[in-house]
Length: 427
Image (cartoon, rainbow, N blue to C red; front, top):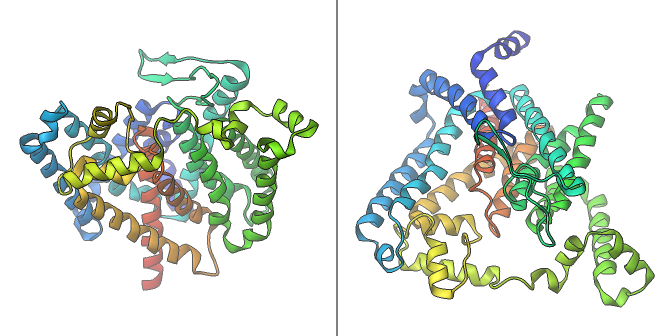
């Protein structure tokens, strides 16, 4: 084991891959460069193994269906003419999916053992430190950008914070920052609270954890808040109920005191004066007053578009154009990842992808929750994937390259956990 770990430390593929992982949130172009080099090398070494794993056949089918959908849309889709949708957009949309299928398969070599996965987890946690620092500087010290490096190859957005928007840090939008932090949260929790007696190490991660939680709150993203709340019981299981329920009751009571006029008085006034308005207002009617359409109305419109062309879709990026044409309001997406995929490339592609993800998640659940001996650090991979997918049912952050990349990498880690357990059963 020691010899194997030493070989990986000095293996150029592992060096490039892990270096790329570190740069994902802060320098995605550099991350892509290092990760692609390592994955090309692994692809050449493992090219005969792809079809041996039957689950990869699903990815081949999805790829084939997506390409067929693009061709059909370009030739026969009446929406392209009626709504002036550009044909090339649906082809560009493929880059949100097909390259990541390759990333998923080729990166599994870097997640084979518990030690491999823990190293990746540690790197992702430490890579989030620039996100935390930049976010705190942005929120409390008005350190705003954007800042460009290497002729725009690297951009730290640091958006100015106004009365509505929250912390973005390096990201282009607060929701993207919230999605990244929510994905890293279970990894950091697992490092902070486990059976290890390395208290100094755990305290370091607890310090980072405080930063992650603070930044999640400051993003002003309800999606991120919900993800963070769900993470705790899903990661720690039934044993967490004894402290999770009191925590939820305390938070709910606190929110009621701050927001409900029944509790009007000096205490409420003190709390409102010391909590940023944009945070507590999110729990009042005023937090929704600027919406020109509810999520349910948007979902209903999305389903209408899907029904009109269920098999091949209407094309990537078509929903905003159709929705604005029909309602007069602009929405960048349908606020549900799977309806968005159905609109883009049809229901068959979506159904196969959901089945693909479901198989991996169900197998992982059996491996990580139905055994007495469970590695909480491995369980964190499952929680990160599950909570992220749940969050994408009400909003979409997947289309940020950093978020989608870390999603498919962690999914590769989850698949490796399943493969490792399969080998143990056969031995």
